[in-house]
Image (cartoon, rainbow, N blue to C red; front, side):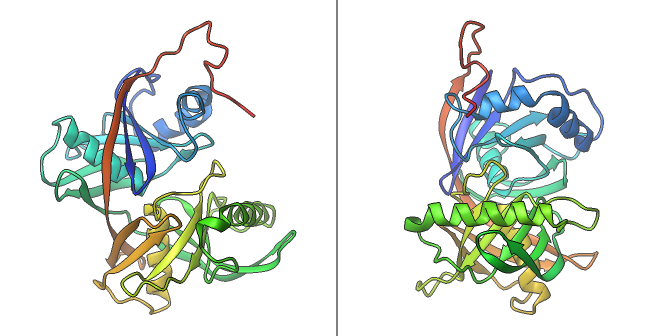
Length: 310
């Protein structure tokens, strides 16, 4: 299996060029469902140690349905197939340029959540125009075992988020274990209490928002991903959901740009324009760097061929 690895603000992406199962044709949402339900062992083997690493997201290149798109992609981590991935789209764009498949300028990429537009500004810098994002619940209070009442918003940015602002725990690297434990408890509580999307979609990510003393940075976040690892980047789909909340509260004007920082200090530049359906069209600018090109081997006599499952 031929793969190229990159990181976006510290968050790893593994682009799979060949060697994946045949998912057939048709809409990417159907192919993503097929990957999730029929090939779990495949995507987990690519993401889990010893081949993968915590927080890594896979980007499986597939043929797009829309002929105006330069690529189709299905994202996944060790625990779930994702509708969209912002950091992964930045990493994929830089990888496609590294392969000589695209040049500087604007391009369209098809994902299971819809078509997104990317602009490659230089060999490392990409602006992603995401799908329309929206807040669906404001000020929902959960009863979180071990933490009590926790209030936040439910928003969609390509994945489903429960967003707590402000965080009851400072967003600092020394607190990552505490932040992880709390956000896992919040996600479990949201699912147990039936809090999610309009059609009952479960929360798959949790964001804790915090302040920062840096004058040019709007805020810091901690983002829990489906595999219970934290996002090293500020999370593209999470930033999109966050923009929807800021817009709904009148706390950010259309076109106004802010800097969102992650728990490790990496950053995105964010802005939005109003969407046609009452939400927002997010713009996310970040940097990715290619770090490896490899051929993955799945030997039959390897006792950890399927990955290390604990």
